[in-house]
Amino acid sequence: MEWSAHQYTQFENERTRPVRDLLAQVYPAKPLLTAADIGCGPGNSTGVLREHFADARIIGIDSSAAMIASARERHADIEFRVADITAWSREPEQYDLILANASLQWIPNHEELLPRLLAKLQPGGTLAVQVPDNQQEPVHLLMQKVASDLRWSSALADARGILANRQSADWYYRTLTRYEARADVWKTTYFHVLKDGPRGVVDWFRSTGLRPYLSALSGEDQASFLDLYESEIAKAYPALLDGSVLLPFPRLFFIATCRD
Image 1 (tube, helix red, strand yellow):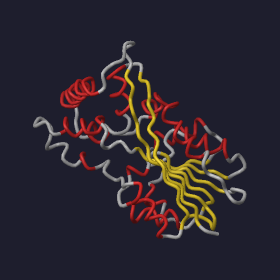
Image 2: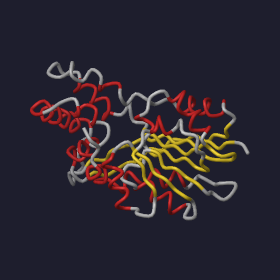
Image 3: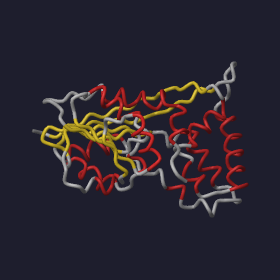
Image 4: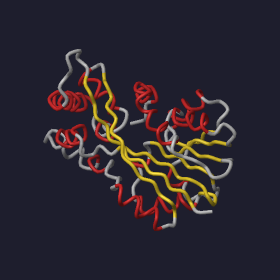
């Protein structure tokens, strides 16, 4: 299933707020000349990067051609490439700042990936990362529950593990400092008001967490999966008096700065 830039940007303000909070904590010790936005999506995070570091040469990469097309349309003055983060991390070019906003959770083997990303930093360079930290929230636990339904459990056996590529805050701190980087780690829970109630929650995750499940199903099974998931969401996230739902969304942040 191809990424949908339109579906993703349906909640653009909510999705962009964490990258603003992340970059607000980046204080380069010297002028920042080069920056990369890895997993840039439709370019909303790249735009924030440009706002903070207007004089830097910025590139954005994403594995989705549809997302890159949307990003190029939005920011004609920024270089965007269709590229896989894992392959890109092995390329020799170095940067003053690497930004990964809600992208590394799709990449396995962080114990191998993080050292490669740190090695792509110039002396004194910074790696700034934000990942969703919501795997124990009802939205994800209910995906697992619905996926275990006998109608499609076999078809979804592989999908259940795709988003398990996340570690704890202390794991990231220990790993980053092992490579002599100065590390700052924190967690924030955002509370998003979704006007469309339980359907709004489903729409939010259709473009992210639900993608592995939906891409493995088709036709009636896909529709039935979404109907069952929405009914479970309605029970877990009761609607407010105006019909909206308050969606808690924990996110983990870390910044690693290489020593000069």
